Length: 195
Image (tube, rainbow, N blue to C red):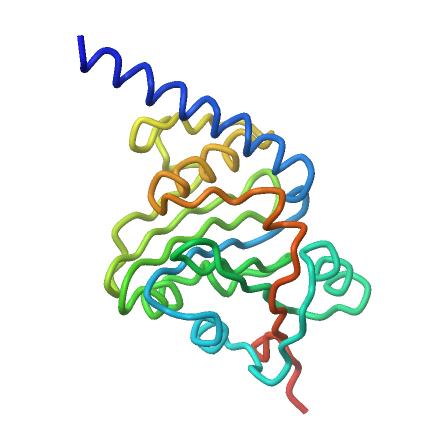
């Protein structure tokens, strides 16, 4: 009886998480983006590893960072704390999705990344203590990962499932309040043109 009740609770929690992330995606994550969760490194260390200019930090909301990205063609990353984790969110960026970056970010802990640049290219990576332990995308997820369904559809379902998996692995729920709040925005020097 206990196992059956526990299974029902897990299904309800996943259902609740899917509903939560469906609303979050619809409101905040409609365009291309890269989200990286990091434990074992602070905000400035995450910025440094991602190739940001530390002196460029400025308080900014996700919405403002997106406007800056598209209006001023400014490649940046918005970084803030969420519980024991640091979240780095790149509007139309990809630095956190690179396996070598993720392994560096997880050198003293864990790092996971969700990247999408539209409905077709979706990637998920998870690294622990500098080693990539999970790496899949829309075409290789095989329908389910850790019991979470990953449908091969061109809507937001895959992205929502990946956010549910990220919550399951980190214990952190990214909410509307985090998205509305100001965090530190850093300019990515990796994206600057050289003279």
